[in-house]
Image (cartoon, rainbow over all chains, first blue to last red):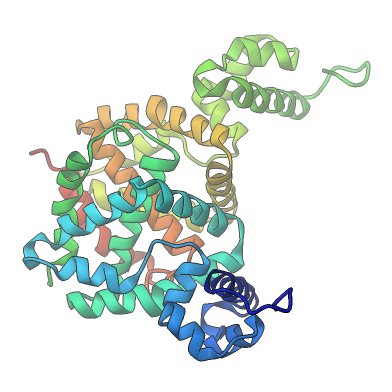
Length: 191
Length: 191
């Protein structure tokens, strides 16, 4: 993959790995892509992919420029009283959609899943196998409820940040937290 | 607008009006477009636009091939005990997304709003001025809560029908109704 005779620097290598990862995820989906195949495509040792990214889910998040790290989500949710999980979840989500860089990636993600079945399939597999698997295990709630929570948050993003429907678009983060917290708490409460 | 010397039939006239409406909504947004301008563009009398569609919101829904008629939504919601409104709302929404024709339009709508700011603006104005205005008045709930309900439903569609995340994608309509009803009831309950 190296274009000149010199050895590529870490930034170049990282970029090569991400380009190979995008190609592999696009061709084989989240499930079908392997660290080994990505490494082969990038012309590096698989250990180097692990060194740069740590895991397939992290390569995926980086390849899609996705500010969604399942471990970070779980750590944030569990960092405090269980009763405050809904509030922490809404705040984390609002922060991701408000910060310029992550917001740009998330907008691009919504665009790609609504126009490309392949992108939707990749995100589906990532959510099912990485994000929801970890979050439901950490919170001890049924999968179906976790998808309901995810759907409310995704819809919040669409209505607040993309369609920009008032008064939700102009509501403060605190107002949105107050609005959604009781509802998410209901989903998190076991029957 | 007539291409031959003969007088156009009702199907042709309706199509001319819808083409003019799409152009007007695209150029001036939902708020800026008027029945008068649409009629002028279509080369017909404004009374004829009223005759075919009844109101600007209905021209809009027809122009976007949108199975969202605010009056129908309100009538459906109010057709029975108030306590069962959440269930009727979820069932109506699931029916629209399951029926082949309306589902096709809704998929196209999600695609267009996530790729076009103009389409997002049109839908925003339609939701704010027609749909949410009527629904919040009929149900007597604050606007912010109505947008929260709308966001949950939009996200449900995205996660269940577009990204197709399991187990939400394969859940039966009854399971989805049971899942969302208590949550929407919470939004509909006044503080």
